[in-house]
Image (cartoon, rainbow, N blue to C red; front, side):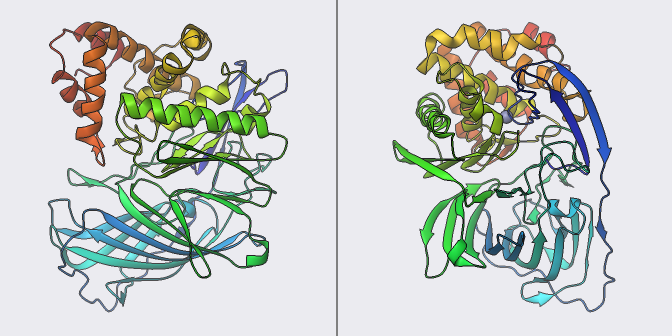
Length: 496
Ligand SMILES: [Zn+2]
């Protein structure tokens, strides 16, 4: 979601809030007044000419998923991160590959990504180039289907200052640091999906998300340069204390995120076999507890309605910015929703917590193309808020439709790419809110039993994969003979 350009929607409320939301599509008091777009320069690292080439592709038994090992040292006060990254990449594309494409999102910021060395199967290479967020690696020999190779990258990150007052960017950004928080999101190079002969790496956009992720296994060994002043850390994955580090592991995950602060307060609860931890700043304890409770309830509701939660932990973090965003077993909630929390479940903090928790199904387990078909996960995540309320606070369902959805008079085709939204509000009105109405109408048409058996089967068939809208409707058709073609015509610009 980081942009080489930036985008602002300013929503004035009684409190003059500055709210910008992508994943969660939330703007509490909707009097949009202005937008501003500024251009950030895109740094590039010039390609290094090919010189000595050595064999790169080794045939070894392929593992199920790519495996990422990130030995990471954070200098909290210097805002730098030193990483030794190893990627075991199995070629499950069905094609012979003579190149790899990695997303290097930190390189969208000037001087933020500094590559020290890169090797493949132990041999240093020079056959690569980095332009913007894209790293191309030429392989000297084909990587055959179902064989694997090992990439090692050593790099440092100089984190950008991420306060909204930064004149170079007017959209809240997550990657970087504030005076009380350090956030690592999309912070390591990763091999992008290869689908139908193409590497999938879309351009950033003013709002919404642009990255598409294969599922992978992660092991992150985390140290701090000064252990004596180490901050509190929230991270994707299950933590285990090592001799001089903390090791986080998570399997079949899309994106490993981390947030650190010396000011975090933490509340944790067990919901079934999942430990949910809520990280928040001082004077926000009631809201932090409420977000924890809502997320835990949502895990239970969605586990029952859709299928099991896939991880052992879930960390929810009060961002020191106004954006909600999902990662693997981890999400941020906007700062201002904590201060606006009113002690009841009828508020943005509660339904956005449910929304972000739902992304652990519709994003984390069932991934899709967030740029070209954003409705595939966002419509379901938004409608899951309704499923949360009907299970936990059924009296609030009509309030939710009125306040969350219809207040904005949603309009537009559900299946627009993020690039066609013509603005944050028209984009979310279509992909999120019309998406929720489509799912409500579909549910009424095919009945609750078929609707939920479809969602359960959609999850079961799609878990760990990247699906398309066509997959959604193919699996839906396996669960109903009802004619819903009028709903497709009403809500979609494409024919399904
Ligand atoms: Zn979302």
